[in-house]
Image (cartoon, rainbow, N blue to C red; front, side, top):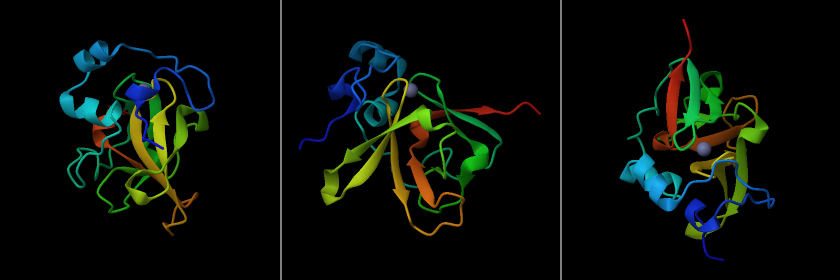
Length: 151
Ligand SMILES: [Zn+2]
């Protein structure tokens, strides 16, 4: 099965419902940098250990770079040392959608924004991290923007 991307899937979620945020490909190009477009709309991956949020411990909320939906909270972020920002849970189950991804000879679970369908990263389970869920949402920094909590 060919790997699908947010761009090729169109405005439909895996369950057949529509993503609330729909933009034309031209609008996505206008909104996003080339690297953001490659990852969010092309299901790409930023190089490990290069993302600006990888080692961040700032307190706040991570939003989708494509549509500003709230995705993750800093209190669910942990140091996985894997090279990408890692969270043990999204801030709400309905904030993301999960798709089976069989590219690269592996079966992985892709994580997308539930509002715009933008590719965020993958989720892995059972790796033994000492977190409440033993899941690792491995998310590209370029897929997100960060909003610091009011102090
Ligand atoms: Zn989004």
